[in-house]
Image: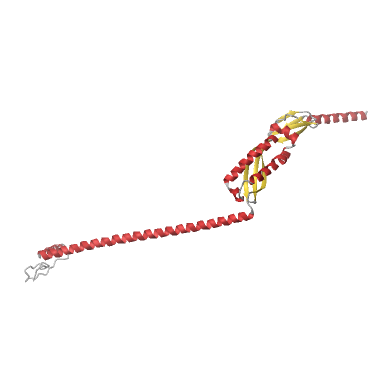
Length: 295
């Protein structure tokens, strides 16, 4: 009796386990931004499962694909027409086409396998092919060359990978590293250009200083000429005044006496000048009034 009970309990637990196992196999949850493709005995479902909860055939095997945008980084060694190789860092922004995931599974496999089989080899091939159109290695630094290279890479990759289930969003050149001896030559060239620029700046500064000195000398010379002209005019005016006075004295002896009378008036206004010495024998006893008399 005890053995029958134990066997019944064992069978019950076994059936419960099988039921739970089947229940878990009948449920598939697809994460946001993902897609799931089922296969049964090697046959791939035509329609993929979108995000969410799904009840499915427990015998099917499910392959999940991340359909969100991703970035693949590639370091390529690209030869140019001058037979020099340049290291170029390229990033490819892509995403898996949700609608083509069944074809991806049937033709290639997982998303990682699709990248390794289709995207990476084609990207390297296009890069090397495009490098043949660039004359010199240092041309990779030119903005117009990089823009044209990005556009051609994007167009050719799209044309090749979209039928494979990969949608190319953009291709960007991140960095360019020229051969070491070219980098050294470029650095030396920059140093020479900087030295030449410093010499030009020093020459411009010296030229400016000299121009300022010349302008200052011209201003000083002009000021000296104006001062000399002013003194000459004053001297001419003084000489004219003296000449006029001499003419006045020569033609009118009383002019001196009039000047003496004006001087006496000025002296009389000074409080300290109160004592005068008068020559009683003179026909003009006031001081200074005898000036201008002819003896």
